[in-house]
Amino acid sequence: MLTATAPLTINEQLTQQAAGWRRELHKIPELSFDLYKTQEYIINLLKHWNIAYDLGYGKTGIVVTIKGKKQGDTIAFRCDMDALPMQDACGKSWASTHEGCSHSCGHDGHMAITLAVVKHLAAYNEFSGCVKILFQPSEENGQGAKAMIKDGLYKDHPYTQLYGFHNMPRLQDGTIQVRYGATTGAGEVFTLSVTGKSGHSSVPHKCINPISAACEIVNGWNNITTNIKNDMAIISTCKLNGGTAMNGIPEQALAGGTMRYFEAHIADYMRDNMHQIAKEVCKKYGAVYDLLFEVLCPATINTIEHTNTVIECAKQLYGAENVVTDVPASPGGEDMQFFVTDKVDGACWFMIGTKGTNTHTASFDFDDTCIHRAASMLVNIVYNRLAK
Ligand SMILES: [Zn+2]
Ligand SMILES: [Zn+2]
Image (cartoon, helix red, strand yellow):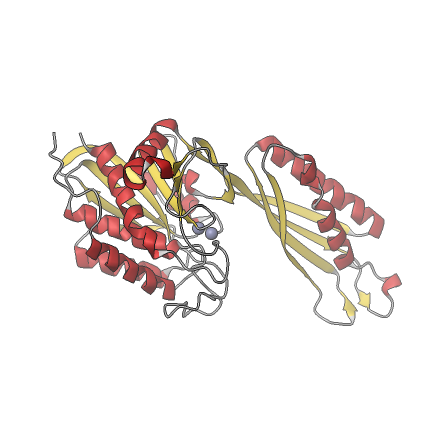
């Protein structure tokens, strides 16, 4: 039996330090798997603190191991690290120094919170078991978790339960929101290519304009999901490219975007209808199309036992009135579920309500005022699960 002498909240000095790291990380946002400066920044801190880590998972991922004073279970926390290919318009002195790249999803904040937890737990390791921190690249395009697992992460660093979180400015500040079961949707990308017949812009009747056909297809897709009630069904076309000259009709137009859903039959329905519309439009124009789908991430599933742990800890730190469980599942995609191997008992991904503009917005900046409670939340989960 351990005595509960370890503090369950991180201290003010560590909170301030974490806000400092967060702003430093905000200056150096990097994309996808190429998080070299970010990785270096984190490694430097870990070395300085004398904390064990392992590299070689998902190119720039980092796995941190903090052992407790006694043997026991192993808990893993997932922390995403990557930024977005967007211009930073946060207007702060710590704005991005990388052109066209910004931490508009707040993963800088997630890293700072998690680093504070690492430092705290290393100093107060009065728990029975082990904590693994999975610093993950490439969350935004749903590739990182899969890649880390493929590189042997689970074989080298097994764990029995997994937790993850995300800042959510669209939710009430000062709340923790968590739901049982499916909590983030499955995400799938689609790519459409329409091939027409190229020619001079002065003789469009002798050409088949693939841009016109692609526009009609994309507009048609917007009506597919209106028939689906009471279940998530989203088709968002986010890219449309075609042509290079102002006076030449191109041969090909390309479109791409994301589908989101919880249920597989909804995905089938959307895919079938997207094909049907593309087929009809191309027949009319005399064009040819190709439509490809690729699943990015499965739905994130919160298991009852582990969600109960999160709720219990959140009630203590945020107050029962600030713990919201009747929250709708998030349409946003998450790839955390790839870390839930068949040997993992369960997982929970929760949302932290924060101040400011929504994520994926150019003016977004992470809300540092959430750091103290969010980091303490993770510390509480450790002591709740590993205090035996
Ligand atoms: Zn994001
Ligand atoms: Zn994010």
